[in-house]
Image 1 (spheres, helix red, strand yellow):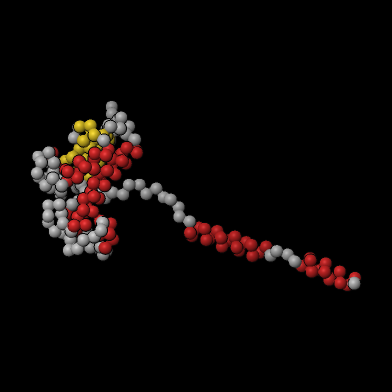
Image 2 (tube, helix red, strand yellow):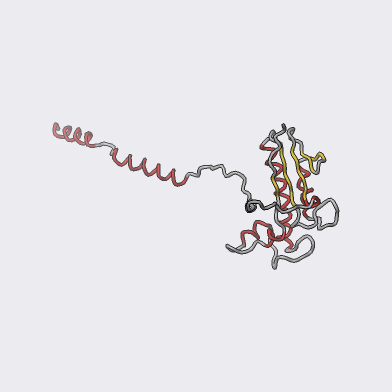
Length: 199
C-alpha cells in the first residue's frame, strides 16, 4: 500500500506543461497575423499628370470657349463660370460642356478640346475640394459608362465592336498594353490651378 502512494506522487511531479512549444505557437501566431493583416496606407488622389514642358516652352493655348471654370472661394461657395452653383450642379455642367460638340457657343467645341479648370482658395476645406473633384470625375465616368454600354460616342460614331454593362467591365476586359479606346476618344482634361492665397 505504501508503495502504491509513492508511485502516485511521482506521476504527479512528472506532469508539466511543456513551455518550450508555447513559444513556438506564439511565434507562429505572430507570423500569421503579420502576413494576413492589411495596413491602411494613405494613397492620396490618383491622377495622371501631363508631361513636363521643356524649358522655355510655352504651355499649349486653350481657347476660352473650351475651358469650363469651376471656382471654390474662401467661404466654400462654388462658382461655375463666375455664377453661383451647388456642388451637385457640377456634374451636369461638365457633361454639357464636354458633350457639346460645338452646338452651344458657351461650351466646348469637342470632347477632346474640353478642359475643366478647378481653382480653389487657400482657405477652402479639403472635403469641399474633394467633393468638387469627385463630381468632375463622376461626370466623366458617366460619359465613359454610356459609351461602354452603347459602343458609340454621343455623336453617334461607333468606337467599340461590342458593348459592356459598365465602363469598369470594359476596362477590366482590356489586355495589358491594349489601348483604352473610350479614354482616347473622350479624355479627361482637368486643370487644377494653384489655390488663391487670398491676400
